[in-house]
Length: 341
Ligand code: UDP
Ligand code: MN
Image (tube, rainbow, N blue to C red; front, side, top):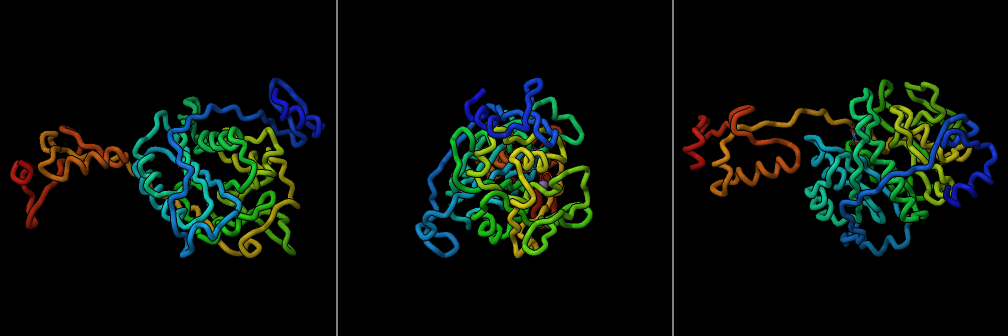
């Protein structure tokens, strides 16, 4: 057991240990995170010269925002990351932790991330196989756990942590609002479930309750995108965790860092503005294009184009499956041999 945990236990007597699990006064079980960390690539230099019309140096010593993005391979992955990157490009003093839910490092993503010039770490963090076929599966949990482990291992105790999924929509104002989080800040998220919103109820500048259409016993019924955490505050909790429990990730994470109602800092004009949206992308199956491989050479652009689409996980080219590649000219379909030979 680490010194850190022992110290914590001494200070918090309401905790007991059973079967290697830590039991807290709210009867939730936690164990310290113990993820193996796999970094695919990392570039911590900021290559951007101007941000929001000001030179980078103007932002000086602002606290760093650690923006944790779980992502996973599917047709929409590269477009989602591209769209998100173009939001983050405007944000100074940001470290983007991109954690990919797959077994191998995707080099295409490294190239993409390097191109933006935003300081980033690309982690590989596959969902443990035993959860893969569960319905619902714990989506993005292995990824966020890996990012928490990264922050831990690198002793990053300055700045602010925010969990930003790859498919949400972020207002630039959000980043100014969360940057000075003292412990935990909260704000409403648009487009959540039945009400189209989830967020704190605020009275006289204090969070007193929550509006969310799914309570299910959650003490903190908030969306993953609806809060930010100060890292110095989080560092006091050695058992910080996000259990693999679909629907309860936010609640259990916030419990694991000892959140109390009166600590919550409401943001976004006392939780009246929507600065983040839970947009979702319709997911479609991989495209399939039938085209003989002899035409995938450099006689035309198609070889390189279709290879790119394959690397991005958007479409695959096959010899004998899927729809025949329709190639037309002057409104008429043409045989491949005529255009490509
Ligand atoms: N995600 C993941 N692995 C999965 C499914 C999702 O890493 O198998 C990521 C996804 O890229 C997103 C987050 O986890 O950043 C939440 O997933 P999703 O957006 O599908 O969930 P929802 O919008 O329904 O909350
Ligand atoms: Mn989503």
